[in-house]
Image (cartoon, rainbow, N blue to C red; front, side, top):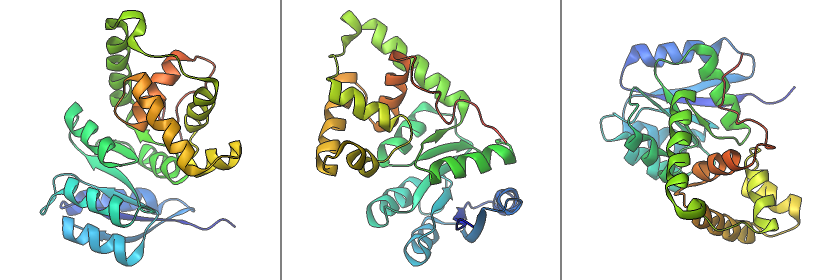
Length: 225
């Protein structure tokens, strides 16, 4: 039997923490190992327990974004899913740029929360579908406003790399699959983001999927189960 996904919940509203914990408790493969209500508690939980996933509010005493930044830097194995009421594009962009793996709205259903946790644990990114669609629309508009799409053509190797990343593979997975070093894959990703005129890995995946209809739908395109 596969090991359980170890999750932590940090939110300063007890009802939110209890509701998310209940949603996760009704599964066989996810266990809640800790909860907290401040940025300091989030960092402490990450360092002491190393949960697989941390669902983290951004409006915490001590700062949610600050806590997420510290966790990504100090304990990179802990994957962050921002759990928030904010639908602001600026907050979504900040979360992705600082290294969060997911962005989930507090109005999400129990099944979507579970799906997001499972997706991020498997290495994919997850953004609440309505926000993901809005982001993709903005990227498409940005591309159409530029001359000849405003992007350089990807090399065959770069296209292969981003296609694998778009399927939820980590840099290490891609490196192993292509018999390359992780450093080389990171270099390719830097070039890809520059050519596609995007700021982060998730935007690169969205842009690539918009350009290549042969790629399978994103894991966050529609929540299920």
